[in-house]
Length: 432
Image (cartoon, rainbow, N blue to C red; front, top):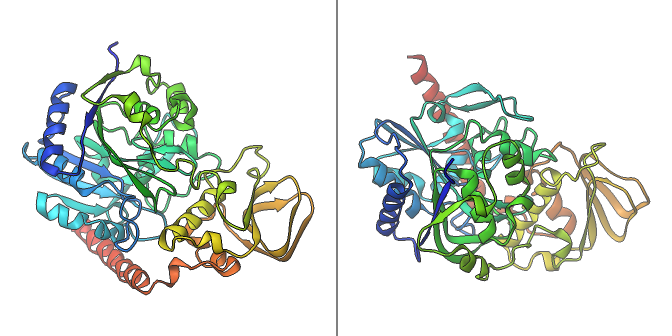
């Protein structure tokens, strides 16, 4: 069989017209016949957005606009741009903050929060854990699926690109299922229903730090392929990893989804992967390793219950997300935090914090050795979401809470009401 092809193109800035031509040329080079005249579903990464301090967590609108306008040239019967962003907050809020609704009007596409539209139950035959999932009817009925990920370092998955993007095809009802020590297999489970016909990855700016509130670095590239696993393998190499060391990529290869060795991938285009790999990329381990943060807080990560595995995708990931958001919103906050300790999972050892509190995060979290502190607190959940920590963590450690931002709180309330109204309206349409 021919090698899967990944096209790596130089793209120095976010100019929609230039990006459109790069994608047009790349599609021709791939030689794949796409049904762009039918129902087309486009999935970007809009995990979060905030006009005040989160500007780089999402696929740049110029990339989405370029691809959408190219699709429109083929006269699609329906063009949908859909997303289910970060858990616990209406995705329509992030779509609006990122400028996606305005983008949709410009290109003649319907931009939707997946949670507001019809979901159908889909059985998954190749899954380890997600044997079924509630998925968007718009996506499942599509004649062509185009994924538009943002290439970023990730706090527990090493990178987020085409495969990791599929967490956002889940509704909020099921987003946190198996979002614990099983997260790497969960990502691969979702490749079955979320296998795109085309991937255009935004690597013009990559990011480091907590992926939902990250810091940008100009890389100046686009990755285009019809093979999401091969594309992610090239992306992993560019980001400084061996593809086989990225857990969800190795699992996907072992399940027969394709090649991750660069020797088995046809890399074409005008950009050199090794040259891109050598470019400075900020602080790749920022928030990946809590013990490296500049803060008086101490962190103790244990195993997930009786599994013997680190629960990197569960409560520890939520803690990283909470701290990453706080630091992005108010730089320097962690360095000024009060002394204390945070424990996730079953920690086999002593936790001694005589000068401050100890916070236990998650239902299974406990310390098997000596536990001493001024006070001991717990946040329940399995897993806990980052949003669930935005009150307790700031209160205990003297940090500024994002929940106390008047503008953001007002937008959350307004968009939550708008979400319920949209769900009711869409439900009535289906009944007619």
